[in-house]
Length: 385
Image (cartoon, rainbow, N blue to C red; front, top):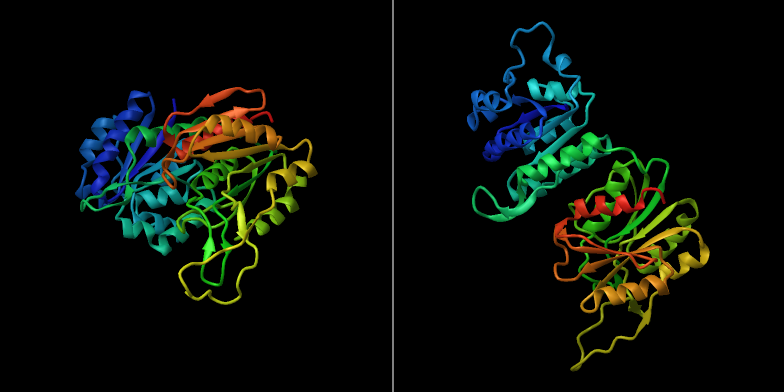
């Protein structure tokens, strides 16, 4: 039986932590609750101890034989749910001024944060920088969802469903480093091709899938390198990150590194065309129309396969029609080992429906899942490569 500590902080969504405890208990997990002082404005110690069947921790200075932060070093996982703006920033700065932060400061077990907060707080650059810092030293984060918040505004900051939180934690509890020793190179995001100093050709790729793949590979023990085009400002990766802008830059960075990797995953949305002669000054609005001469960008996958005959290469296919047929054609033409067909209906969404096709013609269809869940399923296919 796994033993976990559930830290509850002062958020309007604190009541949802009670359901998280209940779901864990139904699965046979031994839960101990720890409430901050602010959390007790929203849920009571009695509620937590009743659901967990364990003593609740609500005060750092309650007399005991062993200091609480030493006594709880044998837990298998610490889950902070909901994790407020305050608790994340405190832990990032090394502050240990209550029972929960003191336990976290002395932890041996993995620590998971499930953030819940106002959408503007979530976007705050101080918070995002501290999340990036914590991820880089081994803390885990469950991405908040977009939806109706406490003030009924729609935005990102909503706590995921309890079952999703429990599922995330279970993967960490049972996960093996099944990609240990593998070197994985991943591309993500979109490229931009300049028309002039203020205009460019691009697409609607958010980069979320590529970042989720890099995070999943690293969590499972791989040495992951991420070559990122333009993405949302909120996306972070704690591993080796190389930023590029254009298709040419991405090609150069990929070719520079493919010799020393075991797996290449090309999830970036690379521009197919680039202006033939970009203007060095802003193109003025003259006359009734404007013609732009374009040329094809270099085919990165083709260049990689010509250079590395045995490298395991995963490509992506995005289309508006005949998705599977066109993905199969790309798989064959590019000499790929695996291709992931992606439905174009929800560009930039947090969820996706992927279809995996290998060179033997085997097809695996994923249901609608989060991109982090999809990334884990892709990694399952790469074990043993």
